[in-house]
Amino acid sequence: MKNNLKKNFIWNMIGTTFSSFNSLFFMIIVTRINGVNDAGIFTFAFSTACLFYVIGIYSGRTYQITDNDKKVTDSDYFYAKFLTCLLMLIVSLLFCIIRGYQLEKFMIIMELVLYKLCEAFSESTFAILQKKDELHKVGKSLFMKAICSLILFCIVDYWTRNLILSTSMIILWNIIFILFYDIRNLKQINFKLEKVNQLKAIELVKKGFFAFGFSFLTLYVINAPKYAIDVLLTNKYQTVFGIVAMPATVLILFGQYIIQPFLISLKEKLNSNIKDFIKLTLQISGIMFGIGMFCTIIAYFLGIPVLELLYGIDLRRYLIPLLCIIVGGTFYATSFVFSTSLTTMRHTIDQFIIFVISSIIATVLSYFLVRNGKIMGACLSYMISMLCLLFLLIIEFFIKVKKYRGESHD
Image (cartoon, rainbow, N blue to C red; front, top):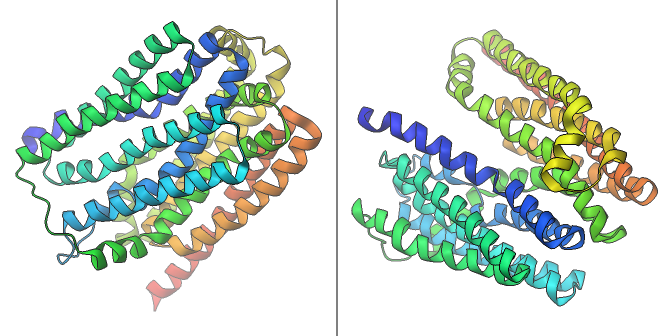
């Protein structure tokens, strides 16, 4: 295993980074080639597909890797992934039908859902490879899919100016890559799919519900203003909000990178000394908050010029909304630290309840503030929703560690 440690780390970091930032590059391409209106449709469709992607991956790769139940096989997870991906497709179709979108918007949303469905399906193969210490192959797969999808999309879109055709090309590429790379990798480690056990697959879906639930609601809370804009405003506003919100997305992803190296330390300190666990949680959250505030200062001076350079549209009126978004992103990145510590303590149901409350707050705020303040309202609702989430998670964290300390003394 030591032989693969270095290349596992490097390729996983490269693959995850390119895959995570794909939406940023897609948005730049569409805005510059297709214009503001099409970019609004695309950014909403992409964020919607990402929300339904959570249904596809369901409890996630980590859940499969860390499952110690010897009665459950990787084949059972594979079949469970079929069920969740099918559910992802059905829910997406129902969403588009209920919302009554015009054909072009309907097609773009469903195509991007299929694109993300390919990613969700791949997660099951990635879990099997990672368990066999082949994480570098996962990273290579993520990298090749991401970079080739971008290049292919850019070339086709440049020549056709047709988002439907461009998106269909990247779906085709991902299907081909899964068949001839991901599946081939499974054959190389001698993985064979066992006979389907429907009861086990359904049981896995039930077991992973709360892990799925707060992942789904997390993404909904982040994107709530986009859904309000979709109902109340035009595609142009969707584009502007998508551009202004992009730095917060980068900040959130950066925050997740920061906390990853501390996961083992958090678990060890929880088991050895609760005071050290609390101290480390507060230190990481303090670092995250400090980075966010630093980014806010940088954004005040450079944010708008950089975004205008990337996207090629006038954004001079949106400095205050941009700062609200970055402050909101800072609140969320900090709340992610407390959420991770609560997860380490195995308090997922409590977090699910918190995210349900936060989703209600975000929905009400978004529709009220977007209706009255448009882009400024959307950014304010994002910032306030993230502050509420942070506040609730901090309270929950200190309640649980206080209870934990009491139980330890007993």
